[in-house]
Image (cartoon, rainbow, N blue to C red):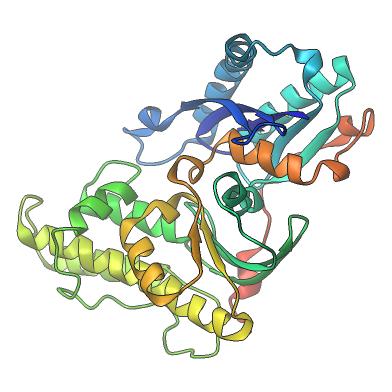
Length: 341
């Protein structure tokens, strides 16, 4: 089976081809990142993102077919991100999938790209079901129970900022470039993690598995308002290390509650899963810990093609494939605010 993956949920335009008969599966992935477009904005601008996706997606598609020497009629299945994400960018990817489906009668599988993040583990590792999935990205922080590729349920969630969002907003307060997670990670390696005791979200609620990352961001803002800090000083590195430690601890503290209940292998996926301190601490605390390969952690079409292949029997056949639509949200974080699960 040849599967085309399309990812356009936020700031990456990405297309990938998967061949299910090959050991490594992924034939080729082409990705255009919009990060440089947002350096002056400090974050994603939806209108700019939509226009950029529209300009880049078809040239990337034709280049992908050219480089892989695969003809469009050879594609057996299309996997496309349909939620969650920015509506304009999502619709750009969906419209490409629909256009191909209309012309070639190709089945389409609409992908929840959060699930694709953790199921990308199967591209490089052998992990059996069930397992605990930790989705840690710029827009979401979830802990899910994965019984199969199509049976994934939420166990815990943040009800405000996501971990990646806390890194980026904290980085902006610190005067770092967007996105800030990698830079904070690098600076933290030479810093004192105990320099400031930043709060761990919901740490006093011992039975509540849900998370909060807004408090640590506010604590950082207050510290910087009351202290002048030189970006080239040791203090700056110490602040980064302390801030990162609080974010990582907040997630792992809640994961401990989940693991106590289920006691299963743990899989980490999403952009923040690249964080070196998260990997270090998780590997110390848990025996069966798996991390999605870094090249599949950020938004990419390879994970979309992989998830569509794993669920190919659930694909929409033509003409039902033409009714697929985009959704901006997967969950309502407010529902978790008062949950004591």
